[in-house]
Image 1 (cartoon, rainbow, N blue to C red):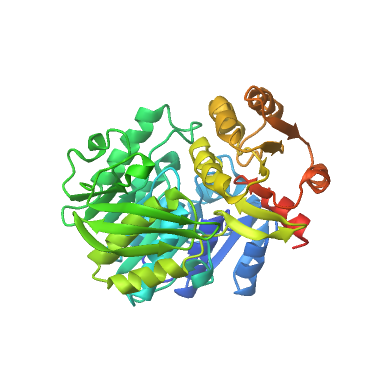
Image 2 (image 1 turned 135 degrees about the vertical axis):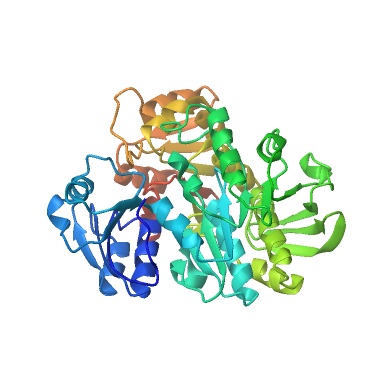
Length: 467
């Protein structure tokens, strides 16, 4: 594998530079003095920002973009190995490494590198932890998988030994990381175009956990079924966290970090008693909604305490956290209809979001859902239908293909048929214009409308609001 010398800037080319993560690392290397270029399929606000910084961006991935003066190529796990630029680099003998390998090498430059993993919630927890470390004056370097307003983007250059990064399990990317500390938020079936089954996914998370050294820590959700299988032979310290409030079906203050006595506030947030290793610490307030966000906050708090950040500073950070972009993000109100956008694209995420949303309106709860990838939709078809049926009325858009080609054996109409079995009102429209027209004609004052999915469904709500 090619090794980057971060003290000797050279020329690096990014294939897929417009991605939320790739763009951040491109900008990071640019700020270190590297000559950076890259390509993407189309123009976006991200690529335009990179160009404004002086980074050369090509639209369309063609072999002509690869020139002999390039020292190394960085590519995403989503590209195919017949990609013109990847093939051209190989034929010219230019070394290449994937995004995860780049992050893994970067982590070696930091004594305190923290990797946040899990099937869901990584961006939220990375954002929470980032704010806690910034508020605690630890000046961390940060790589988050979404836009965090507090750092003006998705990447922050710090000047200390603290590095906070998301760790994605897709194609075992996180096994290239070299973390000193880690978090495992949850382990569910996902990315089944790569993994064989849930056991295969759990095996990968176990391998990730084993990468943490003896003097490091792993924070793991104690509500993960049989989590001991993941932690049984680790050399590092293991700390569990979870919700212990009997009102939510649990009563387990034996978690190292626990939330108890939970109170919820309409469309604003929650508060709870924080316990650390059985000892009451303080009352914590969150300005984001959803019981899953209480759980998300616990390992971030634990790492903050471990870093000796005062609890008052941690509390202030969480009070100021308004949520990551596209995570139950309030977009506005039109005609008395509140519009929220959420990135949820897995049945577990959908269930958590819609369950939380149910209590925020006494009228109709709408969910406008855009399935993400054909393989995920087909694999979880029945679970998607069950999760979406929590809403009162469901509107479906076409499947967002992302990296996949249409196999011809699954569509949003299949999902609509399954949802109808739950006695729910569901409608499918092939275009966003038709969806917007339907919503304008049917939503009424007091309704709550959630646009949901990992594609571009967010534009439906924004268009209705005139954003």
